[in-house]
Structure formats: structure tokens, C-alpha cells
Image 1 (cartoon, helix red, strand yellow):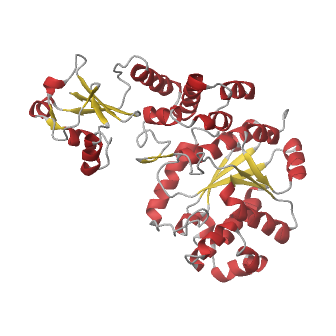
Image 2 (tube, one colour):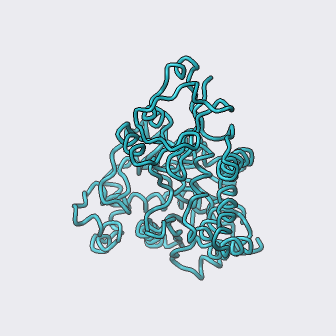
Length: 410
């Protein structure tokens, strides 16, 4: 191994906190280290928020270390209180198992699981049939309640009321680390900075219970300049599943991020060399848009592949540069008969998901936020038919500055 992966992660902006820096540096320098990151299966797709941790796993694997992707089939039954003001909603075991399988499929696009180069594990295997008294004897004795209550993840829940149900979460996550240490010789846990208290719990459990070295490292969380988690839009999360967030919408999300976040995201979410990251991050004024295009293209290429990234970039340029149409813009098709009869603009906005509801559609139109084929429309009862399609057979509906969708007849 040439360059220490810790230097790579630090230079690119990943590392927020780590438990034993000198020992971690030496370990990553000299050994092939087995580490793990946990993914609670609360949805049927990974999100843009997960993508940062996936990138870190890829850097670690490229440097010769072995990732364990731990699917939270057991912990998802509880729900992590970290960073949450309310208790998570409870999912059924079947839903959690389905979500975990989808995570496994998606992670396999980024991580090489062949020949024991990485491991997929599921904590349902050991948590769901755990004997409670045994668990308390094996794990509970090593945890001080006084110390746990000072953890940030619990402190912010104390005002609303922290349930005993959630109070167990730290012990369960710590038990995961211990179990992976026993099964696979896992020595490090990595995760978002909101996991710091839980990670320390596992590090200390292994050190006290086994008198063996164990380490933790957290990554910075992707946030806007206001401190809000990135990866959210008006429509909800930005998903890695192309069925839930199209490659075009995914590209557009990164193309439209704040100027001040461009360099940070280039460092964290692409494999571009750091000299190039710094060069692009230093661009100013209108030039910063070039950096955003590179960012959007590079991230879309990693997540959806080069072909989809090319299509998304072409569609974006077709709209923003030429003001034209493109077959790669998100499109809704109606039958010719449906369009002959006509569709009112509110229905078009709802069907194309540019508006979440009819009332939101009405408000957008009245406020002057909707254009059809480059003409502002303020009458919410306006009906469009096949006669309104342009020479390319499309209605291009534009919402605000960034929302585009086209309607065609088939």
C-alpha cells in the first residue's frame, strides 16, 4: 500500500473525529484492515446522504482494506434516535428485509464483494433471536447510564422524552461491532458524525470485554450553508435508485447546489485529483457553473454510469444553453386521444410531479411560476391539447428556474 488512506480521507474532507489517530494511522499503514459501516434499512433505496459513506468505503477498498456493509435488519426494528427529534416509525420485518435486499443490490454497484474482498452482513442474524438476560450480562455490564445520558444523541431527546426502547440502540450498535469483531476480525467502525457516541460505545465494549484494540472514525455530514442536511428537495430525498430519482433529476440536484459547497462536494463525492478539485473550487462568478457541471457529471457517472451521465448532461445543456428540447428530459406520455380531449394545466403539473397536489399547482400558476413552451401561463384553468404541441411534438413545462418536464403524445 502506497499512500495511507487516512491521508486521502483527510485531504478530501471526510474525517470529522477519530478515536486514536496515531494508532489508526499505523494500523492502516501496515495491515489490511477489516472495517464496517452500518446501513439501517428504513427505505428501499440508498440516498445521496448515504453516498458520502459509500465513497469512503470505495476509497478504503481501493487502498486494500476490507469493508463490511452491515445491513440493519435488527436495529431498524428499533430506530436510531441520533439526530432525530421524534421516534422513528416502526416498520414490519418483511418491509425491512425487502429494503435490506435492495441496499445489497445497490451497494454491489460500488463495492467489490467477490473473493472475500468485502462482506455483506445483516444484524438481524444475531439481534432478532437474542436472549435479553444474556445480552444484559454480556453487554449491559460495560455501560454506565450516567455516561450514556451525556451522549449528544440522547441529550437532544431528553426534553421530549427518551423511551427505554430507543435507549437500547447504543448497546445494540455496540454489540454489532463486538459481533463483527468476533466473526470477521473487524477492528474499525466508520459512520456519519451523528454516530460518534454509538461508535465510541462499540470501541469501548471491545476494549473492555476483549482487551483488544478497536477504533472508530466519523465523517462530516453533508449540509447546506444553513446546516440543513443535503440530499433533500421539495419532492423529498434524492435517491440513488433511478426509478425514484431519475438520472436527470439527480444530475440537476448537484448542478444546482450552492456555490460555496462546490469544492467540498467535489472532494467528497468524486474521484477527481485534489489539484483539480481545488482549481474548480476556486472559480468565481459565472465560471463556478462550469465546476458545478463537472461535479454533477462526475457524481452521476459514479452512481448511474457514463451513458446516463452523458444523457443527463446533454439534456441539461439542451435546456439551459439552447433553450431547446431533448429526449433525455423527464417525459410524461399521454395517448393522442387524451391530449385531443385536452388536459388542464393543474392536472399536467400534478401528473408530471412538478406539483405535489392540485392546490400547490394552482398556487404556482397564480404566482406566475409556470411556463409552457417558454410562455408564462397564469390562468390555472387553461387547457392544453395536441394543437398546443410544438414542432417537436412536445409541451415543455417549466416550474420556476429549475423544474423541467415535457409532455408528449404516444
